Amino acid sequence: MSAAPDLFEQEAAALERALAARDNPALPAAAYRAALGELIGHFERLVRDSRRLIRRSDREERELNVLNDELHRLAAQLEYKARHDSLTGALNRGAIFERAGMHLQRGPLSLVVLDIDFFKSINDAYGHPAGDAVICEVVNRLRGAVPLPAEIGRVGGEEFSILLPGCEFEDAMGQAERMRQAIAGRPFECLPGRIVTASFGVSWTAACGAFGDAYARADEALFEAKRGGRNQVRRGEAGAQP
Image 1 (cartoon, rainbow, N blue to C red):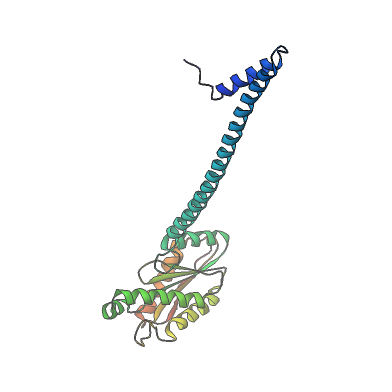
Image 2: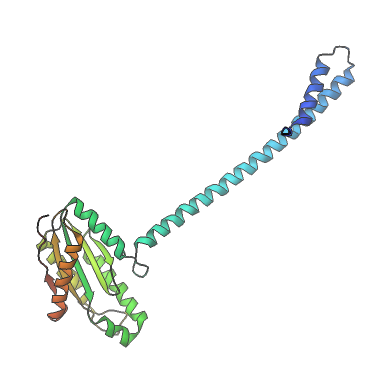
């Protein structure tokens, strides 16, 4: 296999000639100057090439930093979109269920589920854009009503879940009533003076309990609120100690 080419072959040859001139005292001064001049020429070219390479390297490093920042930004956007509802910005079904399981590993959890009353009639009467506006307004009103560290999730078209970690059952019932009033308390601007209401179910689960069971109990309470006339809060059975 042939040897790799020497990228500095000319410079190495010029250096050898300069060294030979230095070691030959019999050479005339002109020969010394010629050898030195050749060496200086190669040195200046190497300096120019090095500066150019450094500038190019600096530019490429800046470009790579910009690309790296953009990749981090896109990754964060993808992570956000994977966990949040695109319409409202609330957590999506998968994320809210995951968060609920994490909360239950650390302590008790109160769960509020709600469903907008007569939502199909809103879509039928005003159109789907108005329905989307109602959903967004409901989430905005919930954000103003629920306390930290509560988490809001959209788990279906007009269905929502609110996680209240560490919240006692009676406190959660009071929180749900405040949410109900926040939604029903004044007309929605996106509808011509129409009041929108929602029905609520609440459950409480001890630490290490199963979220599926918590959700089933809250969901049953929600259906009781629907059957009982809507626009009300109903209590689900408390979960047993695991």
